[in-house]
Length: 186
Image 1 (tube, rainbow, N blue to C red):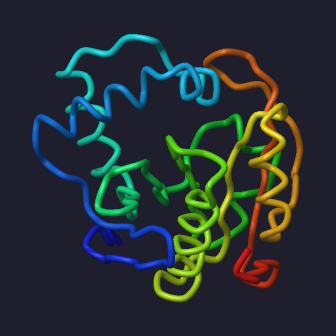
Image 2 (cartoon, rainbow, N blue to C red):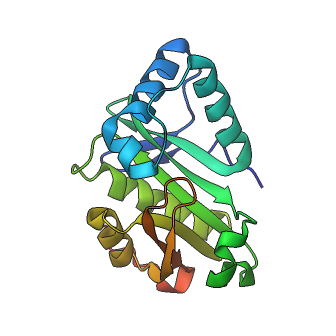
């Protein structure tokens, strides 16, 4: 069920495919190595260009849908809906009870401008209305109050807390179903 070609338009941003050129790979490398992203994702500080190309290709291949977020025709982030991880770390949260659950991941470089909100709402609408997804989960660091407050406003419920397996930081596990989705054009 891969849906990589759908372009979604919002008022501020557009979700579309990824550029496939060396200039974009350099931009993507800078995103992943930025202090904000390293702190927010638990990633590492240095990547080779080969790692970036492989990482991006793997993410696109493993996603149900994976978009680049554009503002004024410039890439400013990414958002994806990923197949549910079979990791034992989520067994306590009953996510596997749903028929077609996915994980939402998002990375936006320019924060505080509404780009992440709009990208999230576009992706959620598409997931529930076009892909027949019945549950969306995510993890968010507990100290990322801006993000988890947005997710709660959209209807995500906190299922519990766990430690990030990569860096041991505490994070919430959150879940959204179509019935609890609040699309009020935040």
